[in-house]
Image 1 (cartoon, rainbow, N blue to C red):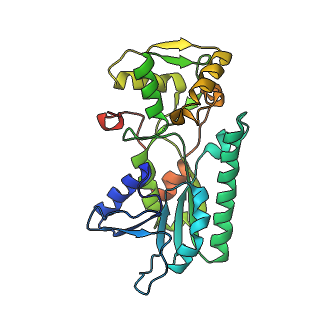
Image 2: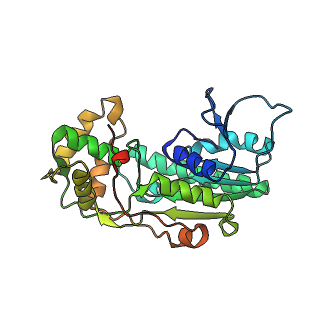
Length: 281
């Protein structure tokens, strides 16, 4: 596994250990083995005679880092690779933010590189593109909304914020990823993974208020004001990736069909609900 310390990586490890699968996780930095069935190796280590073959690989790190590991995968005898991309390649395609368009380019290039490499080496590939991921209070989507609510006591909206969303829990993404490792029909396929419920952006935020034990409180803010606020916040490292384009998308539908994933992977995502474990301390 590549990206084992990520949000989805943690959930995938739990699932794999639950079905008594041995997990070999690769990292650029030394890690201590955290469980009997999880073994850590350095991704940049020199080849060794005792290296065991690994036919199934799961990459839950950003897909654009994957090409750097193609030599490692070849050396260890890869037969199938499941990689996590994002529906952002579609939703941010026409973004007014150059950094977001750069993300789209990197996603597209990485997906194309994976397919070309896999086909030239006789390797089966599976690409999964989740929508808005949340979970464990460690995501960069719902968790950021929670922090805004806690600090301001309200949430700023641009317009009516009726754009449709399909938030997906990290555990559901992990389940689809693990299923894709062996599903025969998934070979050389790409799937969109969306949550089990489609709801307006405003309703999504309202449910977050309720999960925090608060009554929803919104203030409509014009775009120019949001632009000023975001520009000021971006001087802080934590908010460096914020963009006015994020606010503009509050009124855009971002909906994807996951029926093919349900058919081939047994994908059955939950409705949007925040448990106490999904709220940061």
